[in-house]
Image (cartoon, rainbow over all chains, first blue to last red; front, side, top):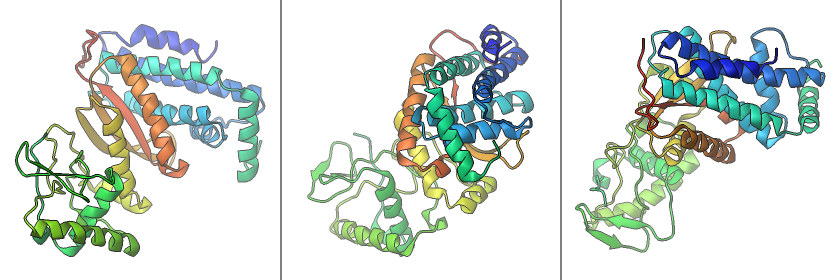
Length: 138
Length: 214
């Protein structure tokens, strides 16, 4: 099981007639990207905490890595997280129509693709510099 | 040419005048060849110094914002120059009270939560710049709603969320979001960018996808 396997779930559910499916699609789309990036960082010995702070940590690492493409991913991942938070917790909102949920699924696909195009060695090096600067434990 | 809304110098206090100009000079294109519009359609005059085409209206009271003294002074000087033309009977196509383009999404900054968020971070003008960037890039934006989004899981994580209702095809909107991120990264610091998040929502999509709750 890999993080991006959640993309298939998101793809199946984003056009569902049922709002609960569509909200789940958005949630899976976010976690596909999050887990995909997290696995790549852990594989390169970047420690990600096993709490909710891990979400912020990954965004911070991408943002401060000095890699432009990673910064762009961080900005979009923050947006995806925000709408995922709404999908899972704010059940009264009317945001989750088929088109918007498909948009979020396709955004996640793009983010995974963009991340795969990044030089991971350079990314990890940039993150380590940031961790040293902020004295974050490795 | 859109029918323009006018603001006479005599109608505003000094602080308001300066604030208006400050907002304008910060957010709108100021070029060497500004275009001054008359008060009626089709009436246009070329002047040596004038404001560029108005793109947006700001539905908030500029007097509720704070500015550095230097910038206020600069803005006041610019206003004085324009005020001279106003007194001469020329209508200047600016307004801080009404949107000049009636279909432009309305940005509501009156919510206390939002005001507090901006005040704590000194981010009022960054909000307007961000909003301006949204309108510039998401050309099918129908509405822009602001809210302070607090993460349900991450402690102390809050961002100013711009909910942008857009129309059009998904691929195009994704491309616009790419362009938007490129653009805001070029004009904001990492710290300022971390205050904001934009979430496009599609309404009336052109791909036959239907929405609604069920």
